Image (cartoon, rainbow, N blue to C red):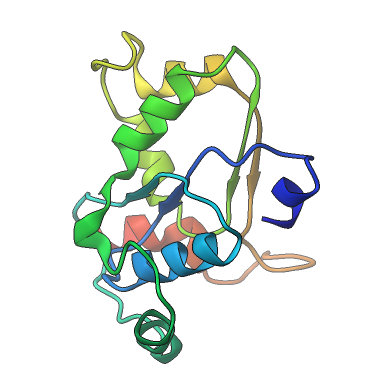
Amino acid sequence: NALADSGVVNLLGVVQNTQATNSTGVISVVQRYYSRTIPTGVYRGSGLRDLAALPYVADIVARWPSPVRNSSQAGSAVKLYRHLLAGQPDRSVAVASIGLLTNLAALFQSSADEHSPLSGLSLFGQKVFRLAIMGGRYPSSKGQRCECNFCAAAWGA
């Protein structure tokens, strides 16, 4: 949001990479704080562990007003990704994934739809010029168990 406020980026949307119901409400609270109305998509796939949200999540949703309170009020992350990417010029989108890779994996496996005749992987390749992923262990993950952001989707499969 700070980069959007400074004009460095145009924030097109936010996707939630987990199934925690109230986390969508927190996304809405933060966007409202920054006076933004942007679309939010939620992971609708299967095979992901049903991890409980951290304790502060319900507290934020209960204490701060927002138009979206939970994940039932948001659409599919894959549909949102496809809609947003299809509407942008080629090689113009930067994607920052700061959580699980569930939505990206689901996007890559998606087929042509009303937004684009391309597969998800092809659509991503055509529209995205940069992908930044948060994950791993600094300075090295060598010899350590796979970090959550990289492996969470695989654990449930």
